[in-house]
Amino acid sequence: MPVDSFAQTSQRFIVKVNQSFFIPGDTLVLYGKVSSSDALFVKIIDPAGRTAKVDTIYADINGSFTTQLMQWPEPTRNFTFGTYTIEVSSSRFPEDKAALQVTFTDRESVLGSTPPQHVLAVKLDSPTEISVGRTFRIFVQVTFDGALVNADPAEFLASSHIHSGNTTINLAGKFNKLHEGIYYSDVKLAEEGSYIIHAVAFHRGYLAHDSKVVSSGSSIGQVQESINTLKVELADTSRELNETKSAMVNATSTIRQEVADLQQASGQINSLIIPILALISIIIALQISLFARIRASFK
Image (tube, rainbow, N blue to C red; front, side, top):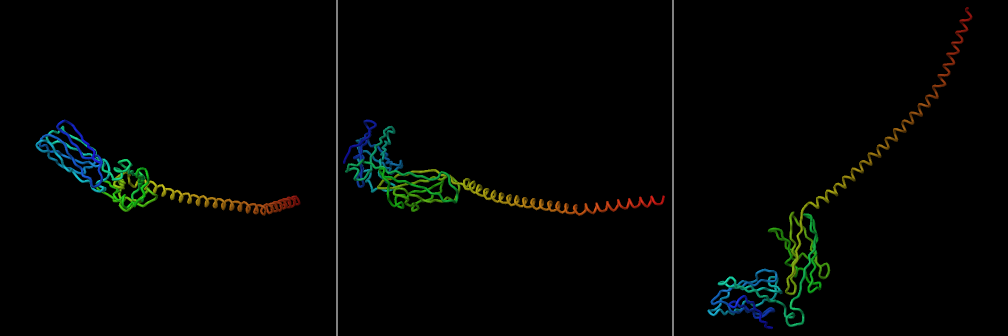
């Protein structure tokens, strides 16, 4: 399995590593030729860009050096499978630098016919705007070499979290399986602000993650609540208007009925009064005729 990998920036600065691929238990050996009695600063950077190890190596009077830099451990969330970068720089000559890449992988990838690196992928989905005090749901899909991962979410999603400023909400143990490879968690935020949801999956020595920014506030909830309240108030107002309209219609009908009754009564009174007036007129006419005759008899 030994493969001679090296980086060279000048004739006086040659840095090599004993292998290109490492499995748990392998030893990483760094060696080479630099300037006499040089002190080399070594930094190992993990696949996520974080510094995994820092060391200092001293060359002898001839500039030669050989050191066992580290023994590769079993993979963990802090030391995952993937491609690592070894940065080496001289303390005497700042321009003398080297960068080597090595792969930390599983035994099957190195000894078998599969590719030396697997691909663990995480896809996070959630609403972008949520309401304070109301539960919302986030979904996480996890695949390994394109296949959905069917595992216990309490284990391989344990590092997932939500943070905003100095506030961190741990999602460990809060995920449930919806379907093979698809998991969900119901979350409720108590304060307004912008939050970053960070879904982190650790599976078979590999680490993958995805993140999404969500904004929590009372605006959406208040708008919806105001709309619901307005709907209720409009419904009450409409009902009151309908009741008022019905009362007015009833009152109008009553008034019309009373006017009709008065008109009918007036007609009945007129039918009684007119014959009486006619009778009085006849009586008056007879009296006038009688008085005329009496007057004529005295002449």
